Amino acid sequence: MSNHSEKPANARDDWTIDQGWSDYTADEHVVWDLLYKRQMDVLPGRAAPEFLEGLKALDLGKGGIPEFEAMSDELESLTGWRVVAVPGLVPDEVFFDHLANRRFPAGQFIRKRNELDYLQEPDVFHDVFGHVPMLTNPVFADYMEAYGKGGLRSLDFAALKNLAALYWYTVEFGLIQTDEGLRIYGAGIVSSKTESIFALEDPSPNRIGFDLERLMKTDYRIDDFQQTYFVIDSYKQLFDATVKTDFAPIYDRMQGKFALKPEDVVANDAVITRGSQAYAKAGGRLAPVDGSK
Ligand SMILES: C[C@H](O)[C@H](O)[C@H]1CNc2nc(N)[nH]c(=O)c2N1
Ligand SMILES: N[C@@H](Cc1ccccc1)C(=O)O
Ligand SMILES: [Fe+2]
Image 1: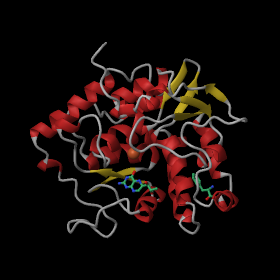
Image 2: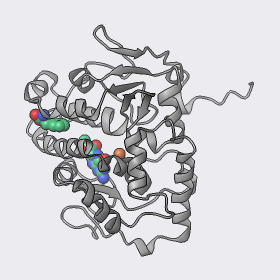
Image 3: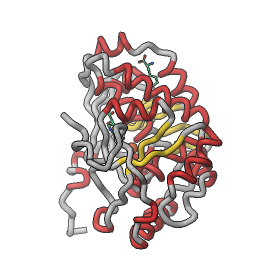
């Protein structure tokens, strides 16, 4: 299945476009500020310290949609990463090649006021607010480059879905154990107010200690809150477990299939929370609103 539309006429061969920062309307900058404040209502005490430090280092709260070139100059001085504008989802090999070269492809558009909570394609808020702060952390920055290189390698195997699960359960929906308790580093969680609370506090989802192969063979939700969150002990653990392991045998074993469902808990799991799955069983975000309460 194609996870992108056709390359727009205004996109370059690498699918990048000019951000056109001066073309954003005043209201689009207000939408950024609205989303930023909404997230910062819930993220202190929930987001990983490295995420909050990254937000500050790049001054993403100074007001308005960040200008990618200036933000990239600061980011590049910290970890060598730059942010490039793309129209939306790009083909796998294009995505991986950008990451392998320390270029993070960020959506140029911003969501409308009537789609604040959920949107299909990653917009500038999800990508820049959600993903970019963690790129200021040297170990995570190295992991993301390695993931890109690994992605290019994975194209030689029929196991892209298993590698995609790794991105999904770490970069998008990862949790990290800290001395103060569980914290969020996944971009998909930090860019969602409701999932930021759900992922840490709701008894519904499983929370399971990071195990590379267990994670890569687990299916995931793309349309609702996760039913399982994986927890790393450190970004170094994540880096060491992935960069130093040859995935070829894993790809051969998994063949692009998911042996486990999103809600499964299995024998060797390092179970932190055995979830009730009450949220998913009640229909998730499409559950009928119970007017009787
Ligand atoms: C597995 C696959 O590479 C992954 O879903 C990619 C596809 N293309 C993308 N394109 C953009 N712009 N952003 C993304 O996060 C992704 N994800
Ligand atoms: N070790 C993986 C490459 C990779 C590194 C880091 C993250 C994801 C994938 C391989 O052998 O293909
Ligand atoms: Fe994302």
